[in-house]
Image (cartoon, rainbow, N blue to C red):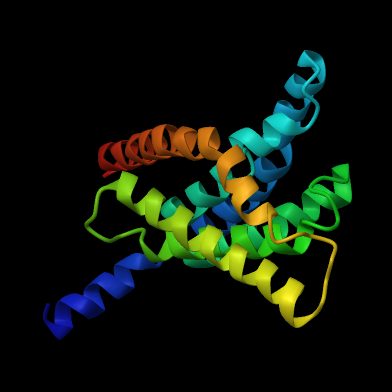
Amino acid sequence: MTYERTVKNTKKASAPLKIQVFGAVAAIIGAVAVPQIFHILGAASGLGTSLGEVFLPMHLPIILAGLLAGPIAGAVSGLLGPIVSFALSGMPAAAMLPFMAIELCVYGLFAGLLRNTEIPCLLKVFAVQVSGRAVRAAAILLAFYAFGSKSVPVSVIWSSIAAGLPGLALQWCLIPLAVYRVNGLKKYER
């Protein structure tokens, strides 16, 4: 890859400021609203908050913000989404809040960095999922072993991955469809 092409791709990676702000605000709203829908459905079905743990609804708008609006919008919405949700609804649980904020910030950042790469969207989503979960696991291990925090056990790393498999699959289906739809609409605006 030539230097000129690298510079051109780097400039292309940055979305206009208006798109970044709109993407971040929409993702934060989505990170609060979408999980509430799952919690209402869980309460109505007697499953409680477990639907949120299974379908990972907060992840959807954050990954989309990164893929559509860029790394800054993705990272900011990933960091603030769980905090705003906790302030308004008490969810996620206080013990998990810092780890979710870290994980979702990484999701948004990595999704944004992969935004204009020429790899299939499904592979982008998978790479984002792996990176976010890996950083979250590292943060939990650091809190547990380096700082002696007992608020979140290390076993939550594997149990949350197992419980969230349906949510990961949902992301594989919905996010590429949404990205292709939005990108298809952009073609017709030109």
